[in-house]
Length: 436
Image (tube, rainbow, N blue to C red; front, top):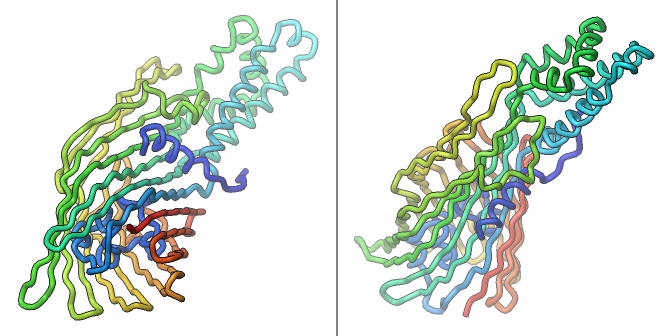
């Protein structure tokens, strides 16, 4: 029953991102540091610091000039069971099932009762098999994008930033009574015959109203628009940088919950299932240099907590006559990350660890990430990168990362990222930046 892997879930995340003009576990996407295990709190360059740790904006060198990132994009998906396509195929199965029922006639039942009943039994068997396969399955995808203009200064450095990150999750809620009902049709010719006669006389609703499993597609897009300022101080001979990014924050939530038998991923972004919120938030950061080769950093993103409810979607249970409410809450919480980096002109080693949990929808388990990475700079214009990122809570897939960086003439930078991990997790990213 398992089918070849594809990027359908990532497509959902990316599509809802694009709809609103907007990686993974972070609230930022930056191809160089994504390739280094998702690290960057202490190792990012000044031109991308505003995306990760605004304090790094103040770490520009004398010969550094304005840097423009336009854009940085990335996506990652975990879908080992090809769930998105499987749920979409359920609607095809139910259409066939309904067609069999609609084509039932009293004459057909009288002239070929065994053949007609067997046809209905086979349709019920196929549908029951699909539901059993989907039971308990989930898939999720993430996507992000960002642009930034960083302007170094002798006293105060500034940057303008617009970034967005999206998270989408597909899940099914299989009603066990659906499977029982379909298996009874499969195994009881007498019962099936009675239902067939009833459907032929009264219509297919007498059978399909007993099917009440649901599928949910939930997604959140958070977009930030901010101006960062940073400055470097001397404290007991140690250069210490401090940065802050006040920002306008817009959030779009999607709660596409419907009968699994009518689920269609193209309806994910319909206005019926979408709501939005606008608020204010702030990122802060610290960085300190110890000697020529060591940097430690601390970043705090989204320091103002905010809870946003999705639309309340209500579905009628045809079996019981009850109306069931489906609603979730998206949680924006402070994310504090510590990092350390050792760097030379040839080699950079980095490590980051979240000090707080990453929260999202209340219906999902929290995660807490740690990563390590390395970069080797070759020939002055080529960089090779690799890393590892894991969830210490064990609720998300551990991934290996890698990538390349090209810097012809040291003014144009092209960075590429690849991600691979557990549970058929795949990802990719790219970034284009220029230095003037």
